[in-house]
Amino acid sequence: DQQVKQNSPSLSVQEGRISILNCDYTNSMFDYFLWYKKYPAEGPTFLISISSIKDKNEDGRFTVFLNKSAKHLSLHIVPSQPGDSAVYFCAASDMYSGGGADGLTFGKGTHLIIQP
Amino acid sequence: NAGVTQTPKFQVLKTGQSMTLQCAQDMNHNSMYWYRQDPGMGLRLIYYSASEGTTDKGEVPNGYNVSRLNKREFSLRLESAAPSQTSVYFCASREGQDYEQYFGPGTRLTVT
Image 1 (cartoon, each protein chain N blue to C red):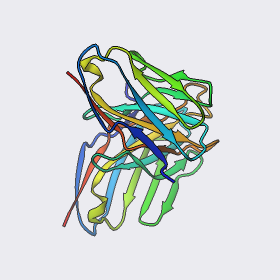
Image 2: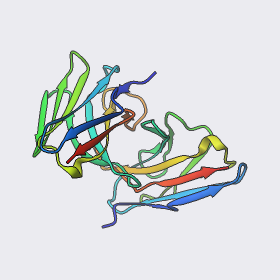
Image 3: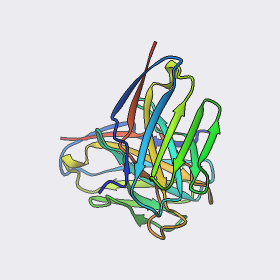
Image 4: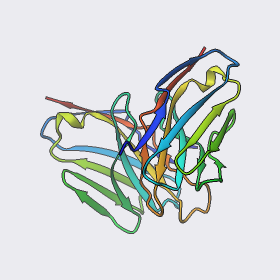
């Protein structure tokens, strides 16, 4: 059963507009969420994260929103740029609350395409 | 400062052959991880090592073994490769109480 879901396999956005990537989770023990960006033939790189005690975290053009009651988070990119074209993975951790295995649980990813 | 390095970048094996994927990090991190990524899937945890001398199974450990050789190096071994192990393998490391993991560039493995 998938604990982290990214229901949009791909998303196309015009350059300069806002990109919104969504992520849902089912495990209420997750207490930290991360977004990773991945270019082809490279490893994922960390983008931004949020603790479950917050509802928003901002870093330059990137903002992550967390709605804990809905078990939903989103990544906003404003304005979108051509270099933002990549696959974005949502990941979650229950490392300090779940008592189980270490490691991150990943969604399947959303391929963001920025159109010129 | 190279971060996380992985060798080889590409490998083709025949069914039944064995091989070891190498991973090293130069960030003095205690925790290291092996993930696999299949088409249309997210990364899935194979094994992890919370510190030198310890290893634990992740979500998909069957068919794999690992060795935490020292603090820097964490290797993944396929004793008898199967076509189902065709995947891209990523190694990652993490520091202390931080959540963020840092990934290597990956090894693309094909088993025929």
